[in-house]
Length: 422
Image (cartoon, rainbow, N blue to C red; front, top):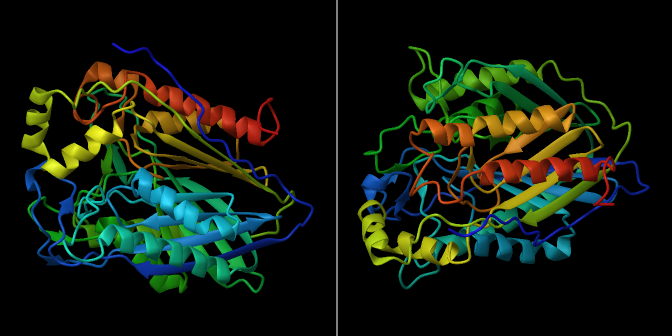
């Protein structure tokens, strides 16, 4: 067995500047693939093509600027964030625009397209390349729409999710519903961002139609009520599912219920100018041993029974040098934190980070800037269950805790409370 390692690969910093302005802009774009594109989400599908569209998929971008630094928050009606290569191309395209960091956050709908397949359609421009262009475009559109603004954040406890993995009587659940409201100086909403953790798996696997599931329904309802884009920012949902009542067991009804709670919470927010303007960011890549020997012929044959060949080949290349998750962090005005991780983290990871970070508000963003499958807690591995072992959890035991510890260090460094980042 290879030894545990966590290697710093990339670190970007953007410090607060003398300017005291806060600006924000938002935009949205449809990203639904063409009918016939292979669907992501369930191994039973293999490489079956989509037969239609239940409801369109969208990307929504919110660009915020404090001082001279700006970041883009982007919600994606996709099962996973774009691949490592796609994220790199998007960053390169936006390099002249001066972004300190990007947070490309997938909702994790199980009725989205396969992003590991970048050669479809044959003979035409691949959908994945079109997606990259649309994401660059919507971020630039949001950036161009920036105007003087103010913001506020509020959180509440909800009973809309449940632990789907643990059998413990005290099974952990991150019940926090977190809402960011951004408005212009006249009080008109620019955007809302809703952070909530639950698997969007409310539609049957046999439905071969693209759908944004309940996050899309939630965003649509909030937008109808406010007239401004609404981002759904998925949390640490590795072991969490939706917890619908009898009357809202379909994604549309459940999405409306979540939207109702989010709107109620947003109504309590009083947006004010920042007291200590500034936006600081950090990014790094970690590296862990991969516990799946995809190069082994027997293992590859077993995986081939669960995934189609192109996907197996993709993971063979991705994990050749180990599991390398990306960690992105930002602190806005010293009080609002954002942590993005490229995988399915379990809820106790997010709860631990929120508790120890000692920030008034912390947005934990799973499925962000690439995807490296499940990162269960050590406790969850001891219990077993889906998401805690091979082949869907490829990183060595304890990798999730190591990522969270690095995130904690970054959040303290960005505030100048411990040595290292300033």
